[in-house]
Length: 233
Ligand code: SAH
Image (cartoon, rainbow, N blue to C red; front, top):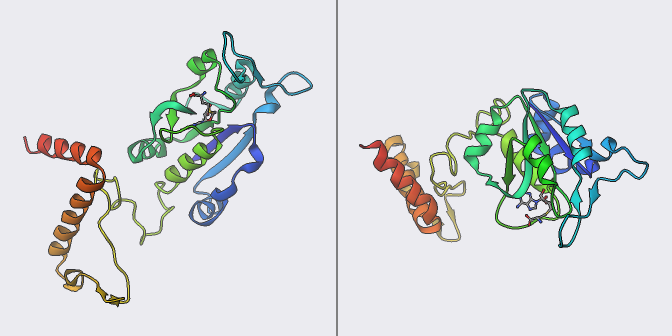
């Protein structure tokens, strides 16, 4: 898979993505992440990418021309173009999985107060937010998306680190896990986990996952229950 990032700050990539699991995936050529400088697509000596908004209001907006030139240069008909934006659909594991099936993603990092609406409406396939808060730019949002998408690509996680059985995969949060020692500060590992009875352990884990989801994420719990009652019809 190829992920291209269009940004005013290409030097901050790959940054944390160059380390550990995602870094290894890039070294093993399972994934290519490249950052492109939006200023290379300007046509004046000063490399102007922003301008004042029409109508009253503070700040600057990204101009449509450099952005349009850049996206038209970097995207092919198969490219899925994502714009980072607090107005976008909220990123989640389901969207990460959908994006991981694409051959080529182009993630555009916004800056300033936002982007000229005409550029947005003609260039962008999907506006994506990483949560209900406002960042100074889209770079960290792009990194978050790259990280979550990368670990879903075949071969990126080792056989011992599956992405099948973890939080959100089935609409539930993950169950509690334990490692050695068997007793730590007078707290014992639940006996059932050493019982060797795989069916019982699976049932215990599901019960715990359901309990945690109900307590911590009523929104997810509601969806999970609705899904289950749909399935049993
Ligand atoms: N005035 C805008 C916010 C601009 S923040 C508004 O009210 O919606 C500057 C840039 O940071 C945005 O263009 C976007 O690319 C990025 N950004 C900010 N918050 C984000 C979020 N929650 N998710 C994804 N990108 C975000």
